[in-house]
Amino acid sequence: MLVVKVLGAAAGGGFPQWNANSAACRRARSGDPAAPVATQASIAVSVDERHWYLTNASPDLRQQIEADRALHPAEGLRSSPIAGVILTNGDVDAIAGLLHLREGTAFSLYANTAVMSILDANPIFNVLAPEFVPRRLLREDEWQPVRDAGGGESGLSVKSFRVPGKVPLYLEEADDIATAAEDGNTLGLEFRADGCGFFYVANCAAITAALAERITGCDLLFFDGTLFSDDEMIRQNAGSKTGRRMGHMSLSGECGSMAQLAPLDIKRTIFIHINNTNPILLSDSPKRREVEEAGFEVAYDGMEIRL
Ligand code: MLT
Ligand code: MN
Image (cartoon, rainbow, N blue to C red; front, side, top):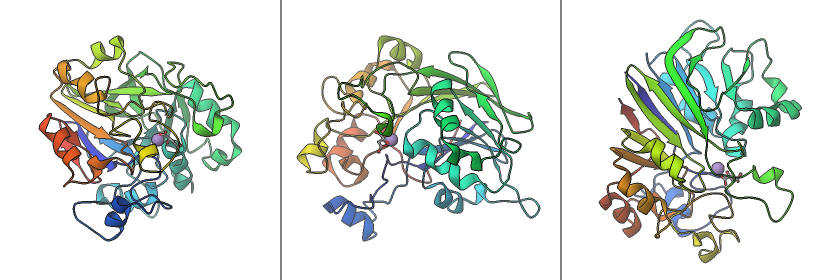
């Protein structure tokens, strides 16, 4: 069996975002059940429900751990069911949570060379001492067994692959950065265990023919749900960037993810990494209805899937 838990459904900043005073964020703050609070995107995967492997370490990880008993320490005075972390990119919302995992409990850390070089170059990540937290290369386009810090098998295998995306915001230098480059700054992941599997492709700027072919017919896909409309942040006075500029494809429109994914015969597609401006976070919004009527699902914190 493969168990997947959504620890966080929101994009960078979460929902509500600390400095956002939009109607939607106010609804979330007031406890409106149709505007459920969402932490920053991450999932946990397990075969035995005792050892969990995280995809990305969100800045909200401490809160995410406390929210789910499965992630609480269960053995001795110091331990954690978190056996490893697999990174898909070097954005703040994907790596900052690693800092919560200091304190000397062992887990394995997987990243490709692009993301590993970000960690290696920043001494703050040395709080994860190598004797407890071995850094392992996440190989691209190759199945690899996911192991804990001591090399113990998890029963889980992962294959990473490049998807269109961009460098983390804090590494942007030129104005003309490639926002849909397949340069290793953004990875998709495919997980397999016991004959079942699924894909995690958050942070994706475009569905290329190769990506479409890869995910066609799959049982479960988590896909980037940052924005509903490419210009929604501008229209809501929430920022000056389009989704495209941020390296994300939006849900709506002819070139949007819903239209591109619809013909791919995927059993379940769940949008994750959803920005606080995206109306699909509101369960009573017309856009949410549109997404669900088209056969797609919207991730929420605490969502659990058994394959
Ligand atoms: C993104 O997904 O575009 C990033 O999380 C943005 C950010 O780092 O704030
Ligand atoms: Mn992000």
